[in-house]
Amino acid sequence: MRLKELEGYLQQVDVFEKPKVDLEQYPTTPHIAAHMLYTIDSTFGDIEGKLVGDLGCGCGVLSIGSCMLGSAMTIGFDVDCDALEVAARNCAEFELQTCELIQVDVEKIALCDRWRKAFDTIIMNPPFGTKNNRGIDLMFLQQAISMSNTAVYSLHKTATREHIKKKASEWGVQLEVLAELRFDLAASYKFHRKKTVDIAVDFVRVDCSNS
Image: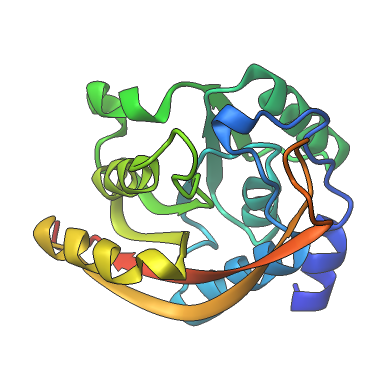
């Protein structure tokens, strides 16, 4: 599947109807999602035929794109039942047979040995850790590393790059910044005063093969 074709499909994915500020629910744009997934598959071969996990899957744009690129199975994890309901509708619309959705608090996944090193690839757009969720981005990343036997692909604020690199080193994994992106964050909540805000975001790959 070509990049533009993938992005066109992802533009049809429904997003949050009533995003929840405490969960930092912001949809991954079709443009960014398509470029992420296309790079993961075409450059590293980490989607087609692989078992893929999507942490904090929200409405399922990364999970759906993963399935379209030929993952053997993609499992999306999210704590919010409303988001998962939208994701389930999206999967049904695309008639996907290789996508499963599980409601769970990502922080508690480590309590279940079933998921330890169970996935080839983890993909995610985790909360950035603003407002009252400081450190949640690192928690997501650490959980993702514990679940993958090959690689984790994630988005993180560029401003936190050095801190995240330091943590990755402490955890015994190698983190590479694949690209610096402009995340066009649309106004979603009442406290947003601007229609859109551009945030510098790193698209990173974490090599988990030796962890």
